[in-house]
Length: 143
Image (tube, rainbow, N blue to C red; front, side, top):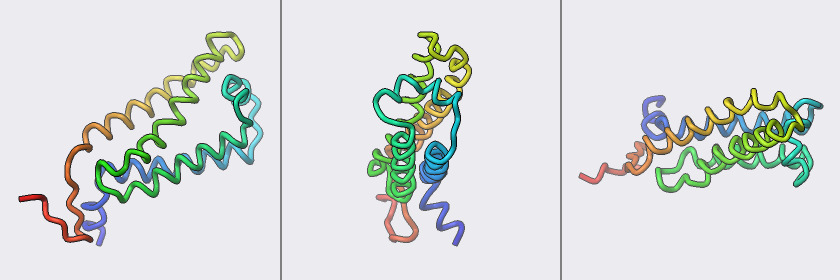
């Protein structure tokens, strides 16, 4: 059963599902915790929406990742956008906060957001464009 699940998900599904769960958890954390440093670093995007709404965005993007983890390559674009979107937006916000002096130490978190974004892109590129044979659907590999 585990082998069939792995054949279906592979690295692509594991990445989408794993990041999806992490984004949901992080979004919940944004909603229920008070973190003054984060508020200062995210100030550029908090002018657009409140922190709780951004928590909802992280949760929605995470849910998109979890749901699309089981889809075939090519049908999971929404999941990869959900996996890449929040770190891209927050990385840019932290960069802006550091560059403008609004929160000078925000620069220290930018590499973390960039690394996540880079790894999502790498997994998407390396695992995209192939037909996934799903053992649960009895699909052939096109031979």
